[in-house]
Amino acid sequence: MKYLKTYFYVEHEIRFLIMNLIEAYNHIDKFIICEHNRTHTGQPRSFIFEEHKHKFPQKLMDKVIYLPQDISEEAVEAYENEDAIHAINEPVMRSAFMKELSFDDEDIIVSIDADEIIYREAYPYIFSEVENKNCVRLNLYQFFYKTNYLWEGKDFVSPIASKYKVFKRHYPCNWRDVGPIVSKKVGCHFSWCMTPEEMV
Image (cartoon, rainbow, N blue to C red; front, side):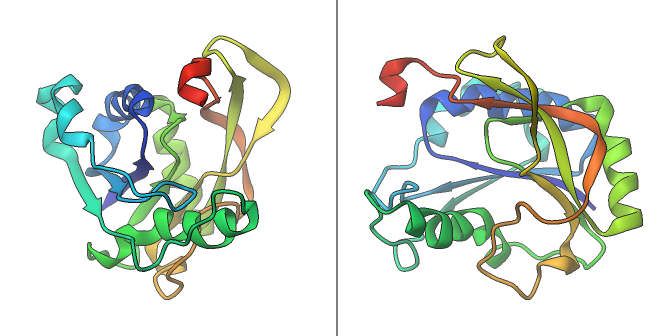
């Protein structure tokens, strides 16, 4: 099985989820969308996916697995603690799906954040690279502040694609920043592509 897996927690990321569903649909078996009851900084939040589900192309929703997840006992308060965000909260958020779904060792999971879009034509190449190397880092174009502001000369290589067996005994884990980097550009990262109000 081949999966695309992501998580989100703010409304403006819904558009990126929709983009990824459209791009990935013909190349994956399921699109796992995780939503948590805590933010990166550990603050409580309400689930919002159901309010926005109608915005998705309904004919493509058969491949969506939505996982609302309670991570209250694992996340920590980290409003002014960047180290705790990266060391505790983000790994929990990126890997909590492992506690709810069953996978085979050879299943391939493309693990991205909501604002990282994988091009549809890149999936066969990504899957081929994973078959040969088990786990690879994905090389993306970087856009900053606006979706048409390309940061030239900047490679963004944090997201990964991996066989499940690489991480299955390592919960919580980041599903990120490991493996050799693929040589081809396979998508784009829309970093901070939001309004000042959304940033606040």
